[in-house]
Amino acid sequence: MIVLSVDSSSSSATVALVSNSSVVSEINITDKKQHSEILMTMIDSVLKLSDLSINDIDGYVVSKGPGSFTGLRIGMATIKGLSLGSKKPIISISNLDGLAYNVITHNGIICPIMDALRGNVYTALYKNVSGRLERLTDYMILSIEELITRFKEESDSVLFVGDGTEKHLETLKTSLNNALFSPPHLNYARASTLGLLGINLLENGICDEKDTAPFYLRKSQAEREYDKKMGLD
View 1 (tube, rainbow, N blue to C red):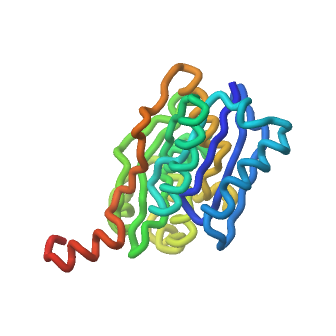
View 2: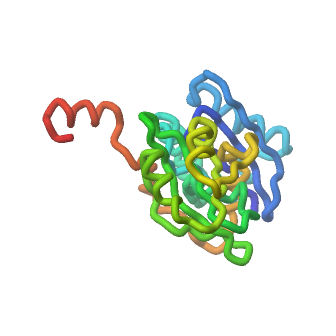
């Protein structure tokens, strides 16, 4: 099985081809260009570099969030269009799952954190259970202070991974004695990681419905401003 995987949930755009639980090829770009300008070009490039065409793709994997509202919509719309056009299955994976899978060999608690602005982070907690990634909590949006409080009494080491780690590194270091930090190159969800998670589901017949949509964990800026104007916040 060959799957095409895409993540455009952050400032990085990443596209990969995964086959039989191995990475065939991958392109990662962190640039100020809009994802809408480069995503299809990246997909075309990764196919050409692998001597494949879109007709060779057996399924699709896409990040479902959380992250950039615009980026998630672009990635989801692009992959849904390819999936519907080819009548091939699609599976959406949280990029928090992808970040945790980057460091699955850690034996303590794995805590991916993505910057959610205003001192908040998107997060969930995971553990490696016999080589399988197990999520321990719901997906959450917390202030960095709330997150630190959760770990004050934790005896296990906690490995932080994600772009929120870089932003809040000093605060986490000074507040927690059991904190560990992933190397910088693992702090971004990669299409190859999502693809490896997704291909196992697709091979077992697990896929999304046609109306699959991103999840954001928070309202958009426009929605928050409207709620504030109407006195609903």
